[in-house]
Image 1: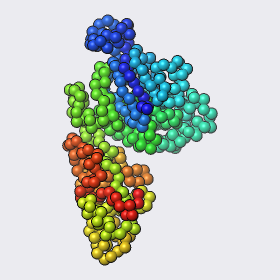
Image 2: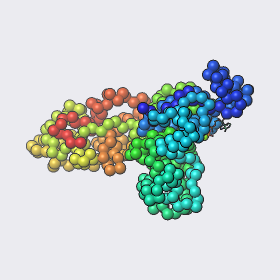
Image 3: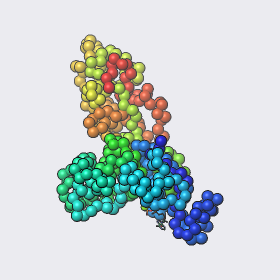
Image 4: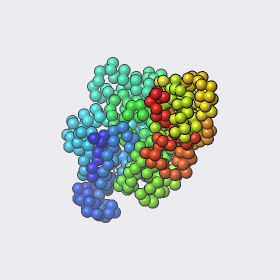
Length: 419
Ligand SMILES: Nc1ncnc2c1ncn2[C@@H]1O[C@H](COP(=O)(O)OP(=O)(O)OP(=O)(O)O)[C@@H](O)[C@H]1O
Ligand SMILES: [Mg+2]
C-alpha cells in the first residue's frame, strides 16, 4: 500500500470552482477558466508515494507545489479528487478525524522554522508531542533523542534566538522526528539556508532517512536539490505534474522543453552521489579462506583483488591477486599472513566530484560504508565517469558477475565467505 496516494486532485481558487474543474476535465485551457474568475492552482494530480521513499515535488514559483502539499495534509480542502494516507481516506474525514490523522501520521517542516522564541530548544522539539497530549517526561525524553539525531543535544536548554539558521532548521526537523510519524512533509525546508549549510542539511536528511526509513514528501524549486534528495521527482508546471520519474529517468528522457530547461543547470558532479552509482556489496572473504580457493574464485570472476572481511560486515582490507598468489605459492593455509591494503571507503552521500579521486586509483575498489563502517556496496569501475558524462547505467541484472573486471568482486563459495 502506498504511504500517500493522490487521485485526480484539483485545487481551484476563486469563483465557480467546481465548474472550473469540470471544464478543465473536458479539456478547457487554464486561460479559458481564468476568464471566468477561477484560479486553478493544482490540476488533475495523480501519484503515489511509496513507504520509505523521498518523493520530491519540484517546479517554478507559483506552479502549485505548496497548494499540493497542503492538500496532502488536509490543511487545504480539495476542489476535486481524493487523498489517501496509508489506509485512511483523508478527503473523507471530518475535522476531528483529520486533526487526529495529521497529529499521528504526519509531521511538517517549513521554510521559516516556526519556532517559539521564548521556549527552550527542547520544548520546541517536544511541541508536536505536547499538542498530542503526551506527558511532559515522555515528550521531553523523545525530544532529547530527536535533538541527538540532528546533533543538537548540547543546545537543548538554549533559546532558538541563540541558534544559526541551519541549527533552527535542525530544531524544526527534530520536532518532526520527535513526533515519530512515518510521514514527513517538507515545504522548501532548506531554501532559506546558505549553500554550504543547505548541503549539510541535505546530507543529514539522507542519512536520517537511510537509518529511520521515513516517507518524505519534499518540496523545492531547486532541481539540484531535487536530484540529490529524490528517489523520485514530480515536476510541476502551471498546476500540472508534467513528469514523474527517478533522477536518472528525468535526466535521460525529459518530458518536455520545460523540464529540459531545468536540466541545463544540473551539476551532476555535485548532485549525484555514491548512492546513485553503487551496486550491491560483494560477499566478504574470511581471513581463514584458503589462498588457492580464493585465487580460483578471483579467476572465475576475473577480478584483481578481494575484500577481506572482519567477520562483522566491515572490510578489514583488500588482498591483491599477487599477494594471494604469493601466499598460495608458499602453501599458506589461509589469508591470515597476507598483507592487506587499506580499504578505500566512501559514504552514500559522497558526491561524484569527491568520488573522482578515490575511483581513479586502481588497486583497491571503492567501497561504500555506513556510520559503523559496515559495507553497503561498491562503486563499479567506470561508474563515476559514466554518471558524470550522462551515460545510462547498465541494467542491474548485469551487475553481480562482472562487477569489477579489475577490482573486487563477489565470491560466491560458501566456505570462503563470511558476511
Ligand atoms: N489562497 C489562495 N487564493 C488564491 N490563489 C492562491 C492561493 N494560494 C495560492 N494561490 C495561487 O495558486 C498558485 C500556486 O501557488 P503555490 O503557492 O501552491 O505555488 P508554489 O509552487 O508553492 O510557489 P512558491 O515556489 O513560490 O512557493 C499561484 O498562482 C498562487 O497565486
Ligand atoms: Mg510554495
